[in-house]
Image (cartoon, rainbow over all chains, first blue to last red; front, top):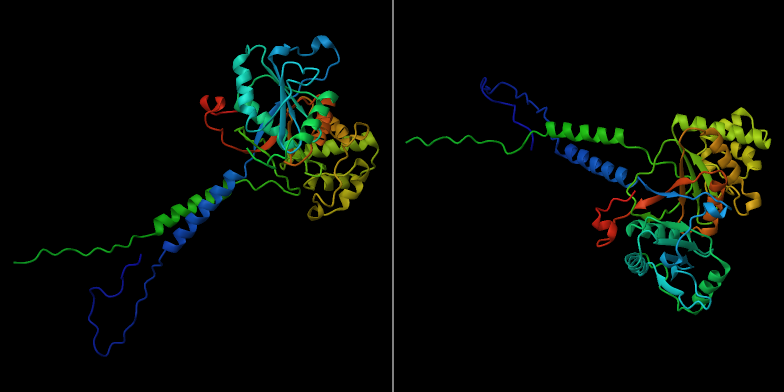
Amino acid sequence: MAEMDTSGGGGHKKGPGVKKSKKLSTRVDLTPMVDLGFLLITFFIFTTTLSQPTALKLNLPKDTDKPEEQTKTKASGALTIMLGKDRNVFYYEGELAPDGSNFKSSNFKEIRDVILSKKQRTNPDDFMVVIKPSDESTYKDFVDILDEMKINVVDRYALVDISEAENQLVRATEGEAPATTPAAGK
Amino acid sequence: MARPKIARKSTSVDMTAMCDVAFLLLSFFILTAKPKPSTAVTVQTPSSVSSKKAPEENMIMVTITKDGKVFLNGGDNAEDKAKMESIINSLNQANNLGLTGGEIKKLVNQPIIGVPLANLKQQATLQPEQINEKSLPGIPVKDTANNELIKWMRGVVDVYTGGKVNLLLKGDNLAKYPYFKNVLTAFKKNDLLKFQMVTEPENVPEGTVLYKQGGEAE
């Protein structure tokens, strides 16, 4: 392909008695080598960009016992999200009613609409999401809900330990609820 | 009438120049590529829309496996290794572990640390190839009374005083939340209130608020 015929050309005519000295071309076909080179380049480009992990920032509040240093939120602007096992999500708005009537169950697909509708209905200064992961939830659930905060641009959210009453409600609801599709990724 | 002679040109192209370019690019990519960080412990990290790259300098990484074992490692460059050495040194003095200088050096060069403080001497005898999530018991964090990560984090705070430390947390998808909470407790007790969680990149879902804003999350 990529060689030129360098033998022959001009010069003397070979006589019948002159031995043919064959001139071999020194040119090598480089096409396969180029192919190989670009193949390796593609390989390196893909492996380097994919192995770079990203990082999700999280700032924790300082633990304080003094009530005047604690962040206060208006109950009306608060949305509490609880994470149960098997990627179940529960939420209530404002304060939890003693009979648990405003306690609702959801999942990772629907929680986005819940957050958005709450965000639109409340004054931005009062809006606050309280995240309460139960002991049954996984690290993935927690990161996914933080991700949801980023996706919906919620600036104020807090990580709070789940209370006993809430924990019982979560367990009771999970006991009743029909098994949702397991490992339903979002 | 003489026919005009059409010079027959060869259709093949000289590949030498292209070959040069290809290999120049290849060497450039190989040289700039960073080797994958040591994976003594395999962890499936969750995904997030965050587009910020995980830092690789001045870092301390805490890994939580799906069984809830906790491991600790520093960065790969010389500066981070020196810092790690001083961290182990300060722990050694504070807890009377009786580690020799040689043992500390060996621990620093191991990909990951994952034993109770009392067993650090034994981990120093292991070869780096023997280190994985099965052979090591992990740093105990289970209960607050015996949360040794608190001691480790105290060492980190002491060594990085004044400087900025990039605290990274790398958790497995299936790690239960209580382990994560215990690690958080260890951070909080030492006033390490800023940290970053290592995640896989993910696209911002279409139509969401962040998507409309341009989709750049920190």
